Length: 185
Image: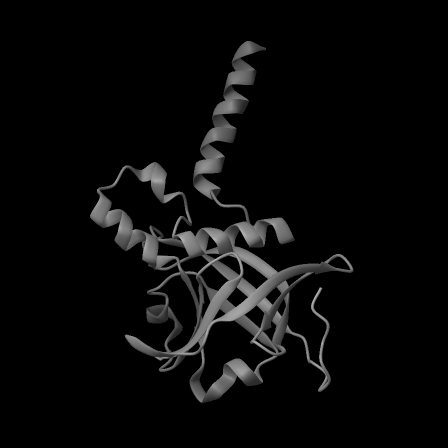
């Protein structure tokens, strides 16, 4: 019996290391992920024991979320998939990108970019809200809501073919906004 308990604990410990990050779609989890992005602490970089210079490089890899924006599809598509890795654009095979960059618990920047550089827009505020058992991301400029997305997927993806560089893959469904002001919870 005692060996069985140790075996179960061992399996649990290794499975957590293999699967790692929490991909539960919840307000609490998304806020944690975005806050980790802002601090550059996604994917437990502190546990790796790397030198300070490598840690700073590693931290910046996960501060942004990328999706294709060729022909302005970011604004036109109803469903978007964003990847949480600075170099994921190699896998996206597109010329222009839309990049979300989180800078604090409240602020984010949305950037149009053509790798390796981009055009930054003024900072926006964002909120993760729970409404009718759904999780939404609401993005607001200084006057009104500019985008609202229903989070329909949160998974782990890999930036490289060798599956060494994990990242988040988030799938969003755009919510059409009325022309009048939308309420922000």
